[in-house]
Image (tube, rainbow, N blue to C red; front, side, top):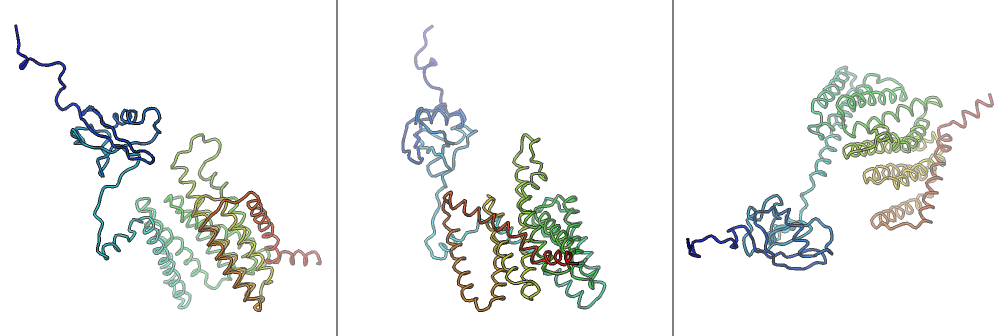
Length: 451
């Protein structure tokens, strides 16, 4: 039987719609090539990319995450084929190692240009600002409630503070991790109004007893919420500050019920806690040697715990320096010694920031150290008012130099790094003796030996 060529099937003609003739333009740093390719239309794009890279670069190609995109368009979907991606014969594709932004029209009107330049892509910063304002509002409400209760003496202020603390704690447990910002504000309200309840409950107590009651109330509420709600870093920070205050007031009462004794003890406790914070974090997050594998979730939790501890104890160190400065301002403590203690503590805190990679922890340490140094400068100006002119000028020059150095960080030489480390050790070594001097430990020992 004879068949005509026009009707017989051909075994060499290509099956329709199975191949695509395309042009691939390479757009990468240091690379500019173009190649014409004939590719199967039904194979996934992700399987074709390695072959395209070999065809373009050969064995000399760098290992990058290449992707195919339309000209100034979105990248092709890797699991889909060229046909499913809508690629036709003669199309020009771009192969890049980074995503190409799609084209857009640029405005020309002044108002549109100003509106376009405005940065509106900071949801994390906006959420943090809203949370901070919520916490500040809670603090203002608690201060207003305590002030009204101490002025009027009515009992309903006490019951109102206790009820607000209980409701905030219960709501925080109910919210859980569904809304972290709301949970942070509620946790703050629970702790702050627990402190307000303690203040209103023993309004006529001595300052040391009142401070001890407030610290223990805050510590108890923070511990309960940490156990019940698995709260965030704010609860760990509250617990750190409350624990340091509790220990400082308890130990300072042994020397005498004086603010400088409590402040010096709080400063020393905070320094010891800051130094031990990494080890405490390792124990709390269970990152010890028995654990062979540490996943990203556990590592992130460890960073959150360490940041909260550093923030809390940096704040408590600043509070201790403020207490010492207040006592020296009223001439209840020796001015030169108090100024030296605050300056040494501030320098040690700011230099301690070098050992932390997280910027938030560095900010807290530098802020706490700056407050301590500022208190020392104010004490010196109070003790020697005639020297205030050069003290103010030196403070301005040091701040300007610090901002200049922070804005343009440079690699330190080994000699400079060793000198900075020696300065940190000297400041740390001076904190404890100066704290004993300010708090009156030396005088107490001298009186005991004479008697």
